[in-house]
Amino acid sequence: MILRVFPRRTSQTPADAYAVIGSPLFLPKDIVEVHVSCLFTWDRPLCEDLVHVYERRLPGIPVQLGGPAIEGSNTDDVFVPGLYVRRGVIHTSRGCPNKCPWCLVPEREGALKELAVSEGRIIQDNNFLACSKRHRRKVYRMLRSQRRVRFLGGLESARLTQWDADQIRALRVKELWFAADTDSAVKRLQRVARMFSGMPRNKLRCYVLCAYAGQTIEQAEERLRRVWGLGFLPFAQLYREPFVGKAQYPKEWRYLARLWSRPAIMKVRMRPQGDLT
Image (tube, rainbow, N blue to C red; front, top):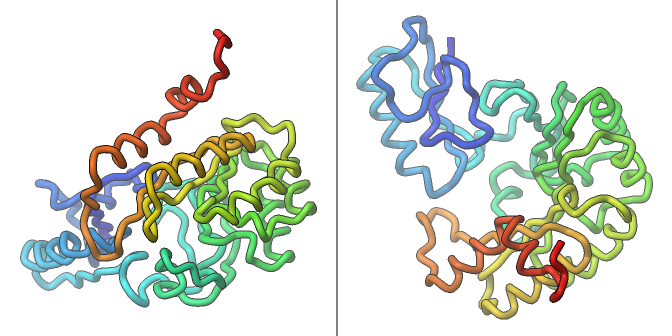
């Protein structure tokens, strides 16, 4: 059995007996291999330490370091459901054809590569809409039998077609995530908003990159408010430099990110004056 080791638990970490956090006191006895999974570049030093811990703790058993943050380790043609992410979360493709300066995906995973479609309800692809129409049709067909469908990887507004919007509307959707990393991306969201007219705000969500390339707090909040005004629920993401630990942003930036990542607070702040509902 393969022991999968993670530096910390997230909402997508597997929960079986062979998926552990750090180095717990007790381990299964039939381990034949150890895989240390590194999701974020800033976790790499901790994951490298865990490799050494398990090499000492389980002498003679191979210990490998891999994951999205490790060069060349996330480029395979196979996705195994439940192995490195919990059941229900799936990848139907790797990589991305875009070369956004703030993103490491093309460098880590290379050009877009379509994978076999597994059963699942949470699509975690980096750029699902960049896949071929034939592949997307397979995914939509699979998703028709799923409940609470979530596109968490982010759907690229510029690639959304009316055909895709119609396919998605036919699903039992919980959340659709888009991105507004630039001001021009906010303009493209207008078209998305028209395609999903009538869909409630809690289902239309949007990652909003903040504090990148000299952006001010005022500019960041203006972008967040514009995304809200289009009918989306924005989620502020403070830019993190690759290979650097937790960014030390001033309290004003941390306050902005906190306000714009909690739906209940956003709804109160954006409520029209005099509206008590």
